[in-house]
Image (cartoon, rainbow over all chains, first blue to last red; front, side, top):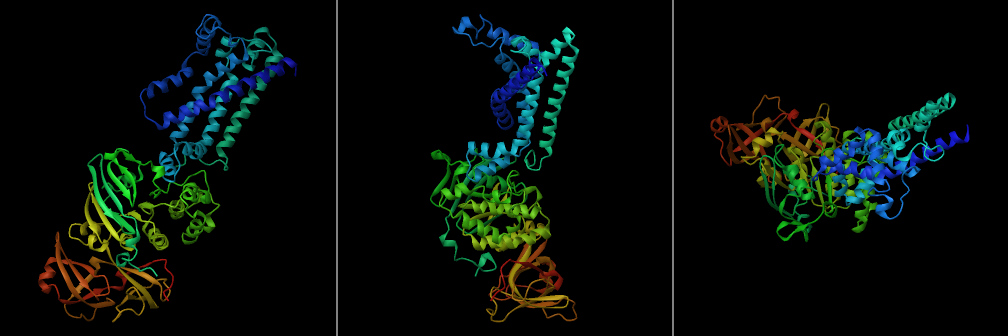
Length: 227
Length: 391
């Protein structure tokens, strides 16, 4: 394996991991709020959360491009300093996080909706306040579904292409992920390189889905939707 | 030694915290409007499905936030909406046992039982000691390390009951804890509830539409109809009241008498009625179907009101195994049937007997009449109480 290919794989894993960690907390909180509470603007919030799923990824990337452009609202001229987002791996993280948040949040919501809310009331009557109930009851009861959501979010982040190349570019060794590298290799006719990267993508994706399946059947992780 | 029938028990009542519930809560079909005070150990709540029983318990728990009024236990006020008092459900120190158990799927039986441990300890409750008592009386020892989805329905409900007790509650709310189980299993679980009653002084509200459970467990009974209290008092008196009896009969009313097994021969069993062995002046014995009870074991005998015949003279040539002399103390008509109250002995709870009004007239029955109660052995059901053999 050439050092360039290795750096592509490592960067892909780095971007996907940071993006998943970034998304996990807000997506879980959003999923829980949408599953459990009624509030003003809930439907609009729910639609906004799902929006990146239906938009062309390049449109999402371009939106960030405008936001972080030199003269944009988060650009150097407006803030007075440079956030170094565009054409960096941080830009790739923002792109992938935005694209995977809806998947994680919607899966988390479905998971919480599958847990009988009366179990949480029961925890209240046993002396647990709201926070304690969330961390000691809701989260552990949802852990299997949430792990599934995380794997889904991670794989989505690994495969993201459109938004990532728009905001972070396709710079070998700096911002080039597997998805972009396959595209480049194919464009320049580097057959062997494209083949190898394709195999890596298949293996990583398969492992992720396999672990999700195994978690789904694990006896040590009871608690998804079994009221 | 605890008496067999709760209504005979008045000693414990004085030491308990009184519960006051004066609440209004709009529901779909009617308004829940309750004004009740009770200081008894176990208060039953009886009524048809949809009468507001569960809504009342949820209001007492604090999960029905729209409720207005006052809820207080002893010196602790949980709700006083006029003065802006609302104590959160987690601060009310209530042990709640729902119909469907609601065991936590991510914890095993032991950790379900200890789910309320923290609050119990904060309140200075001897959680470990209670845990051991609960495991012993509810026979949970072999289940402790099991995951909850491997439990049977009856085991789940026992764990749910144990979990509520281990949190050291000031008030226990039992919402038809055995309603989802079949009758045979419910009868097997009755002794567990009676042991809880004997072991724990915690006041309890017990929702049930099983006249046997209500009579075997409750000192006091409230009947709800469309969100209001339509009767309140001693369970036997309430269930046999003219306006409640048809409902009680619909849910399988039986006259419940304390008794203990004396012998059994062949296909029949024999019990002596009364609370204590040897305590009766003239013991009344009842021939029943064969039971598994040990001689001397405390039992409850159940005799449906419509399975008792009245005779003005001792009948002969009958297959019925029991012909018991009794005295009529009350005669009433309820709808199309007549209800006679008959006393076997001053020491025993009177029996309610259902006959046609025509029979009242033809037999010339009046209060004070001496009659014979004719009861088939197969109409006498025996229920084990979970109490050990009487000395």
